[in-house]
Amino acid sequence: MPTSRTGRPPVQRAPRRPAVARSPHDNPAARLVTRARRAWDRPLTAYYLILGGSLLITVLGLVMVYSASQITALQLSLPGSYFFRKQFLAALIGGVLMLVASRMPVKLHRALAYPMLASAVFLMALVQVPGIGVAVNGNQNWISLGGSFQIQPSEFGKLALVLWGADLLARKQDKRLLTQWKHMLVPLVPVAFLLLGLIMLGGDMGTAIILTAILFGLLWLAGAPTRLFVGVLSVALAIGFILIKTSPNRMSRLACIGATEPGPNDTCWQAVHGIYALASGGLFGSGLGASVEKWGQLPEAHTDFIFAITGEELGLAGTLSVLALFAALGYAGIRVAGRTEDPFVRYAAGGVTTWITAQAVINLGAVLGLLPIAGVPLPLFSYGGSALLPTMFAIGLLIAFAREDPAARAALAMRQTRFGRKRAAVRGSARAAGPRRWNTMRRRASAARSSGER
Image (cartoon, rainbow, N blue to C red; front, side, top):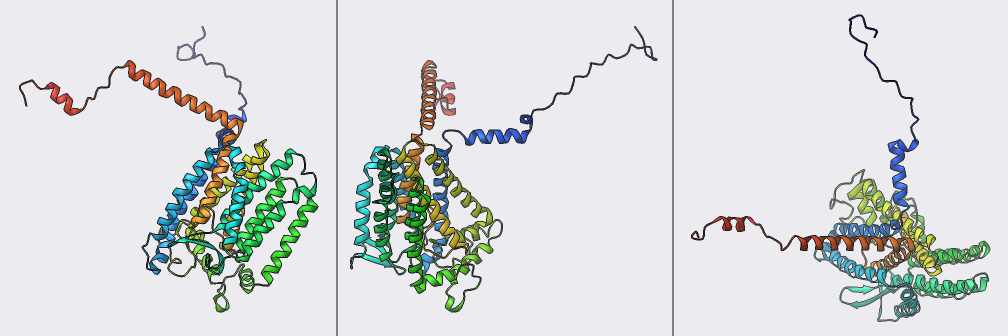
């Protein structure tokens, strides 16, 4: 054996292994992206996004309603938590409605379409009866229920149009009638115009815009031809232009888009102070409850402009969180509508998603100064029980539709089976171990004592 200069045998080195090319999946970032995609494509993703997103928006809305409405309540000689308590009660009732709607079968939802439409039309006509209808901020769209409780039937008209329109289009699709433009328009468009006319009698153009968006969403999902879609859209825009041009109030709101000063006679006071609230929030805000604009400077701080108070108190981080929750909710609704084979579920899910998304865009656009102030609340977030109750019922619809997906149903059944097995295993192990022993310190001490000790 050859030796080294020191006389010791040379050290045997292991042969070098050939370099192996790393797979792109070995990259931590690539693995993270792959896991995120798998989690995003799971059957229950839409179900959890709808349930979790809606609950988070509602809870955060309750917090901001309490913060933004305290000064307004005190100015009206009311307790500081007055508006919060009413909103909390509406959220509890809405939670029950959401639970009931999420557990109802699709057939029962379709059965409710015509009674709900008839009730909405009756109540919206009842608003115009003198002595019954109540005017709020110049719009007569309310019915007094006694005391401080009022109801706005036009909010329930949105839900009625979604359910009735989805049932109508689904029945016509089953009969293969949607290829004819007459069957696509009649009676959907005339009934929608009837609802719009009842709403515009009270002067509430913001709700009318949302109802129009729901109509266009249903027509788009039904596969309306481009010419037909453009024709209906042109008629709606012409009517809207006439209504805006003939109203000085609406023209002044249109002139406040992008305003940075209140202007003559403070016509843009609300829009400008909404921008002030957002601008003073910074990255993380001034702190919960520390808003300055809610001290009488910003009108409707807890209703239409609650997003501005959110930006002032929670900053950019808070506002982006709210936007992310609405984006997740909208994505989940589109996913439910796109993956179903049931035409009613597709139309209803698309109609609800259009409703919530369009209303959120209109409200946020007005607060940001990008759209005219339409006077519509932020869904699930702003103060108002009449808007919260039908919206939470609509969220229950989306949850029910997400559960009806075959893959989601199988995943839920599998989880229930596993949960049942775990409970059975726990019970079996407890029985095998014998009766429970409550080895508390006091019992052990008393057992160690002799019988003569006290």
